[in-house]
Image (cartoon, rainbow, N blue to C red; front, top):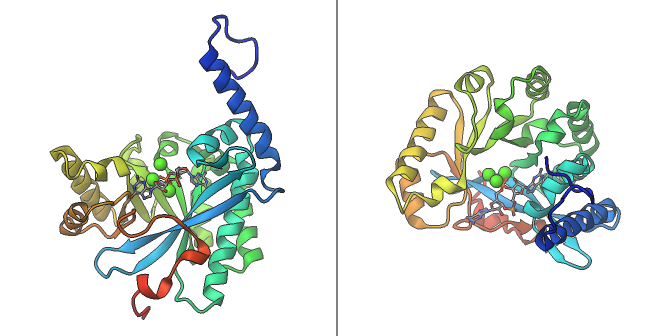
Amino acid sequence: TKRYGKNNYTVYSKELDLNTDYKLTIERDLKSAISNLEFMLHYQPIVNLKTGEFNTMEALIRWNHPKFGLVSPDDFISISEESGQIVSIGKWVLHTACSQNKKWQDLGHPPFKIAVNISTIQLQHHSFVETVAEILAETGLDPKWLELEVTESILMEDNEALKDSFLKLKAIGVSIAIDDFGTGYTSLSYLRQFAFDRVKIDRSFINDIGSDLNGKAITSTIIALAHKLNMGVIAEGIEEEGQLTFLKEEQCDDGQGYYFSRPLPAELHKFETTRGDGS
Ligand code: C2E
Ligand code: CA
Ligand code: CA
Ligand code: CA
């Protein structure tokens, strides 16, 4: 088994040492990142492909490290999951995202959902559902404007506690989307058993739409499956017109990607132009 402690490698590897140092540094610096206000959220719209209006903003965390500058979540989320720090980071994300969405509503924007990425570790924490309920109460956000994005990997586990959490979250009125769909091993019975609201087709398939036939086949199959199960479908990572045309032809509901907008800080979003007349 791989460990990050000092004496677990018998063969010297400089690369491994650098890796270990980096991880330990990240883990150490994460401890003060919240109190030092080094995290921020960027927001990326999810757009209705028929009307062109957006209905959701996904919150994506950014870490402005005092020495390294902007660190990508791919570089620190997994480390924070191993150390358990994701629980407090995840709370910060939820609180900040819900509070931002409430602010947008209070400013008079037509309401839309805020989508928040939830780590497997967070979701399995015993007080997760209470935390969500508390944050909604504190921020005053109506639960129907919160969507949790859960990665597919978790759904292969036959976990009673997890099923219980999903049911409780539904009961509160929060919606749930399955992220990175198509890359994991969700059993079809799991999909049938729970009324997930939406699936997000993984970016890798959208990326393949233009280049090979399998990307198209997989994408249209996921769309058909989701619709048969009464779930909405979001295609992520749309960058080109051709991908959009194909997704519209296949009746994909929503889309997200650089084609529409990159993730941006809250204050840089111009709603009037992206949301049409808002009626
Ligand atoms: P994800 O949830 O699948 O998010 C989509 C990623 O694709 C984001 O990267 C986004 O910036 C990027 N993206 C969006 N549109 C395009 C596009 O058209 N082309 C390309 N090439 N990329 C696009 P980001 O922000 O670096 O986040 C990476 C991953 O880190 C996320 O993948 C998510 O798994 C995780 N993550 C981000 N924020 C959070 C968070 O607050 N909590 C947790 N637990 N995980 C987070
Ligand atoms: Ca996501
Ligand atoms: Ca995704
Ligand atoms: Ca991902």
